[in-house]
Length: 138
Image (cartoon, rainbow, N blue to C red):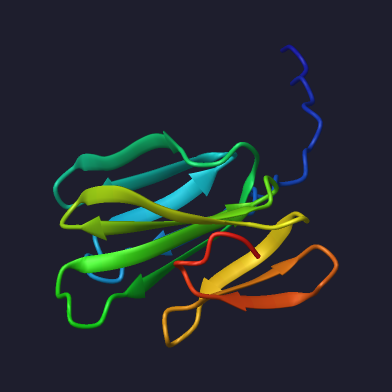
């Protein structure tokens, strides 16, 4: 009887930390970023809403959504990252439209919408900024 070969035991690999959100209006749709690309997939309809959409020049570090008041089907999204940009876009019933971009002098590590729909973000040294989505520089 041959001796069983011994395989080295490997420690479990951690999943990479990447921005991931469930769509606030359609819970069957997941939106996420990998590298500089954004993806959106509706599991219920089994179709892509966004497949590998390139919105940034470098790694995306943050992704957030905001329900636009008074517009029952419109969701505002933001993505931000190492290219020193916050990209705002609007989605209405699966139609994704690019909106304004906010630029900054340092890499952005976190970004969210506040309750009023303003973009709040910080750079890698911890300074915090709040801007209207319509402003084009920070």
